[in-house]
Length: 250
Ligand code: PEP
Picture 1 (tube, helix red, strand yellow):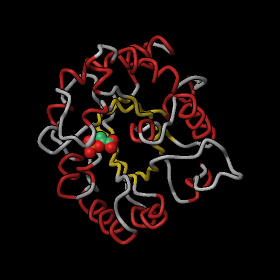
Picture 2: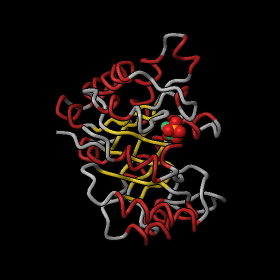
Picture 3: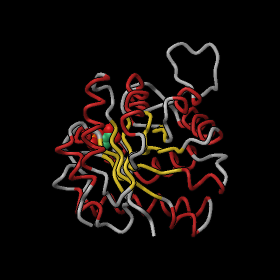
Picture 4: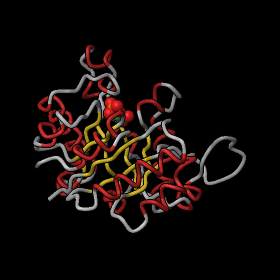
């Protein structure tokens, strides 16, 4: 039985005070949630939010991480720095990192291996662009992203991996994949995991959907057989919209 995992990615929004305020509303309102819940504030607010959510069941996530342990990497944040700030999960390969900042599968894979070696959980984001979908290459693109992203990840680390299927054309656009279309891709991802690892690994893998998830579409998406949670951007920025998503009626 896979437990639903709802994660909020705050992106480059919120000062430290604003982050603390939202985190404290979520602690109050989500204490009884039956699902795994994670929030990923900006780096500058991680330490402060960690204090606010201490003792609650909300997990602290980071939005990115360096591919090296330490050293001369101006502007980067290392895994130890994340651990130091109370982070337990790191989002890697988000489409904004891939498409705005040119991160390639090999770099994302290096980060994933490093994060796992440090005991961090990883949310590995994959997804096709509109051009790729229209060219009919969605399955090929996503399969390659999963295979390359997980290269060298052993079976024993697989329980620390969540895959987020996020069609790029649905992120921040208000366009959502239909639950049926999303489920098709989640099934493809599950079969990639089966080919790489085993049937049991595939059936245990948590695969989130991301792309304009809102309170009014979450239930239909989560009802699909292969969708095990959501990675939420815009709607995670307010308790009024994140709480109903994080407490959807199964
Ligand atoms: C995201 O940033 O991962 C995302 C899915 O954003 P949004 O929910 O705003 O589409």
